Image (cartoon, rainbow, N blue to C red):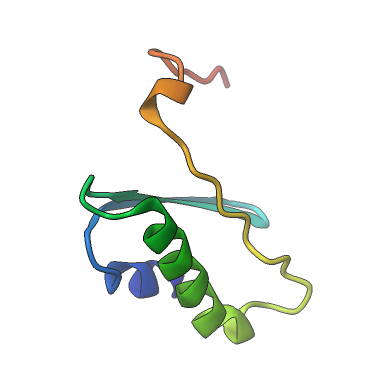
Amino acid sequence: KLEDEFKSISNVKKIESVSSFNVSTLIVEFYESKEKSDAINDLKTSIDSVQSDFPDGTLFPVIQQISPTDSPIYTFSVV
């Protein structure tokens, strides 16, 4: 449901979703023309509109701003 809500936000460039047992991560990338404060407010509004549909005991999602310069050049996993 969150993905559908996020799709309706203006200036969304890409949405990625990764889920595993009891954890979901959504990455929403905006076009540069979107003001950061507007993006965060739009995300919070979207979350608020579907939060009542979350399973009981679900914690409120954490919104983090990430810049590409904050990440390493290479990311890998070992299984």
